[in-house]
Image (cartoon, rainbow, N blue to C red):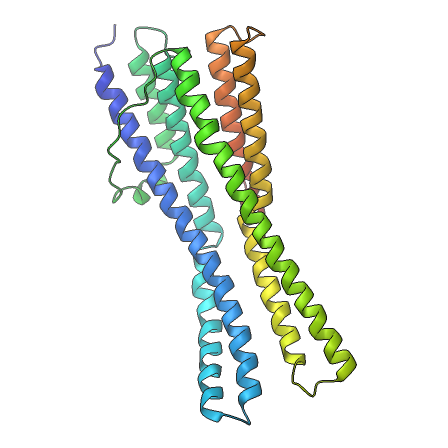
Amino acid sequence: MSTVDSPAVLDTVWQQQGVWSRAADAARRRIVRGRRLVAGLTVVAAVAGAAAAQLGTVHLATSRALAIVAAAALGLVPLAVRSTAREPVQVWTRLRSVAESLKAEVHRHLAGVAPYRGPDRDAVLLSRVDAILDEAGDLVGHTVDVAPPARPLPAVSDVPSYLVQRVDRQVERYYLPEARRTGAAARRIRVVTTGLTAAGAVLSAVVGVLGDGLGLAAWVGVVATVTTAVVGYGAAQQYEQQQIEYARTADQLVRLLRARRDGDGWTDDDAVVAEAERLIALSNEAWMARTLEEDGVPRR
């Protein structure tokens, strides 16, 4: 029989999970900031460059200042792009994968389902955790300066509490809120791009009918550049695809819970936990695979 201290083992793994989750969150924030910065710098460069050209014969000092701003913005774009390149995206997705794998193992252990039913369940947990961390050994450097969060273990002691604390909470506190958030973000992107497209069409029409006496032709290009920047940011964030994935996973988990509670199948404890974790893992793998594919990163 194992002599491993179960509470200490679980607490250690749970704290490790928190560290990897925080590291993944930090990596994601850097990528999002980089994408926003790229879009913002592109917009600034387009607007300042057009304004500088138009003010050149009217207000030379202002024109030069705007030209400097435009050039500086363009020069900073390659620096901003570094945080959104293939390697940072791959690091982020792998950090998140480790965090989610550790979370799944802790919840399975607490629920007391396979493979954590025997007397050596703590040794099994350590072995499985070691395998997960060994696979991600090249990422450890991203966690060394991350402080573990002060939090208790999940209040899970059996399968019924697992279904409440893991599955219900995942639906109500993560998947549904994230589906609403990403849906709202996708709508904002659509509204902004629709407005910019309409503005570009109006400007083009005015220039086409009245000529360029008002100096509007340059701003047609500016509007097109801004529209492209906004669309590119929205595409990189994949709001619409994420909304679909979050909503779909929430629906699948709710139907699983309903079937279990109504006695309509899924009466086996091992099977229902395995299915819940499978659905959660599939959701994670789907968005990670899509993110890597969009950024041109080969799957591992």
